[in-house]
Image 1 (tube, each protein chain N blue to C red):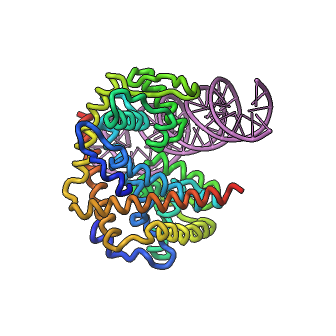
Image 2 (image 1 turned 135 degrees about the horizontal axis):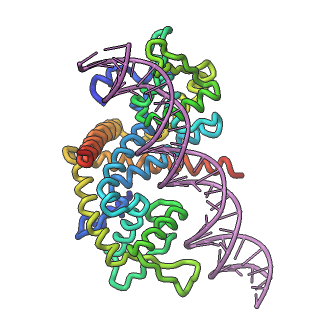
Image 3 (image 1 turned 30 degrees about the horizontal axis):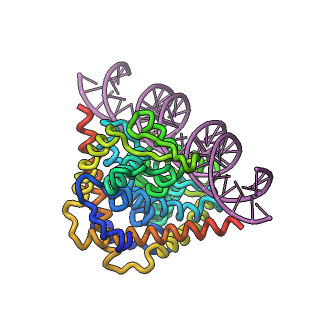
Length: 175
Length: 175
DNA sequence: GTCAATTAGTTTCATATGTAACTATCTCGC
DNA sequence: GCGAGATAGTTACATATGAAACTAATTGAC
């Protein structure tokens, strides 16, 4: 949004300026950023966004645990990556087929099983992480520290508000 | 992100914390906000997100022009709403079928035609706008002025950076 | 004029994703 | 134990979306 755009008052009568409407802005920015990130890994490693999230979640846990770490269940992954269990199931099946992760049944509860990265999976993860970081750095380059921190606060605030609204709405419709 | 989470350093070795990763955060927040907004109009008016964008673009232009405004072409709508022409074509066809917009052929270039809201379309638009505004206000409630402004700046910055990266990537692959 | 290249818009096809239904297993009250 | 209900995960189905092919009309070079 340039200074010129801002000269037009955006609150007259019943008009809503799409360009300054928060959900629209979020969609546009997210779309562009997501695409930019996916370009870093989709072609070279044949990884989709949900698959990347699984790798990222497994890699993150793996590296912050001891050697004898058992892995994560699909349920853990769904919570940690905020994806539905269906998405997790599919992404995991695909990674499994390409030997980037392995599954080990849980003897104590045979409904679930533990997933963890294979050596191949760790290599892919290890190759993507620095690029992902560089990508984020490039995006944030030129931002002041205070703007970056304000942004974090606002994102957190928006998430809380939006999730509260979702829950309220869902409960409205159920009983 | 709570203060507690921040105590864990997120830049050790080759780990990447998904929770603090910008593209992930954007996806999560956008998903929640988009869903919350769609809940305001999808059930009651049977409008999808792309359809809402068409209504929003047409309503915005309509209200900032004179009486004899001719309308917008699909191409105008695609640029203004940042959707692909396929999406615009489909959303317009659906709105057309439900008599929320009308199309008038352009005599000077018979490939294109002008679209504008019908009375029914204006009613729906007029009903959604105040809710959309109230929704945005609810989301932003409690934010300081300076955080809100910083957020706008960062969003603009991210969009420019991400789009520049996209273009660079696209050109990389072509020649 | 006329033909090649461009543009507006639509349709086709392949893919992505969410909801609901399903299977297998577990837990709890009895 | 054992049947009712909950839970982990998968599958089936319906819908959404984007890329590429297509149609129709326009423009520009000659």
